Image 1: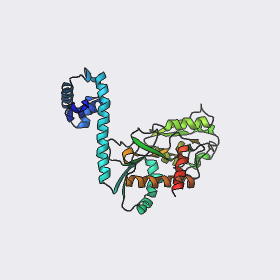
Image 2: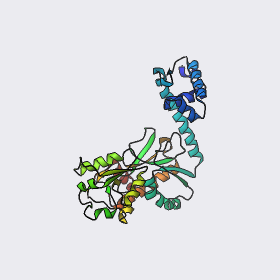
Image 3: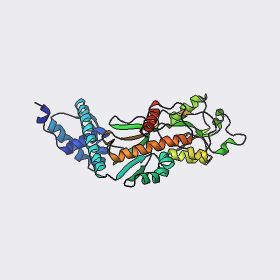
Image 4: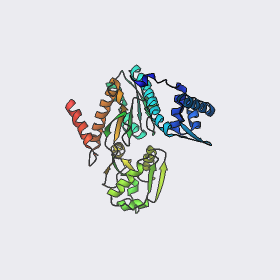
Length: 328
């Protein structure tokens, strides 16, 4: 006999309050998220503990922390509510057959995706693509998102991810920074110019990787100018405010128009390619499959036109290219 069938589940409001408090480690933050008062959330937690007959939290003055039993139960609660959120999102995906919700970072959207959208609309006239542009990662558990373009580490195991575009990093700047007595002629000259950086979490790694490849590990720029978005650093570089270590394939248009130049013939492959991400359960949905194939083909074509391949392209990217060639 399956013993779980005879277990009486606690009330859903108490479970929801527990999951939020365990995830946020704060009754107040959970109350704000749930649009309830802190006392109402605390009441739900007490109801849950009374129902289970087990203490789930240790309460110390204004602080609250999970007991060993609470930590165990929190894992089950997180997974259950994540499954529910994904189920709701899947229902929307299946019901909105003609609407495709896509999230993308600003630089990728502005330089590659948006200019190609008319082509996508011609190829798929029955699909309406709704684009959400922003620096933060799409939250597949809480947002109505069908697919996302991301750069960074691999996402969680419940999401499918495949490489779209390898990223080669190198310093870029406005052409006028190459001119005059203080112009950029060797990597050592970077110490006389500001480094443009953003708040993106992995950008510092790009500068360190390139600096090591150039043999100037101990060199420091004259200053650092920080921007909220990476797109802001690119615009600042075009204005001649300094140098930014940037992804060359994405900036192919800027380089071709000489709004930006690469002062040194030294590039490094980023450990993180741009990836297409979606829920594993939705991978073969017709609208997601259509977008996935179209975007993969466009990214491969962009890499060839840009003529800026990474020196050490990833085996997974080469395999994907061969699969597309075989399919055609």
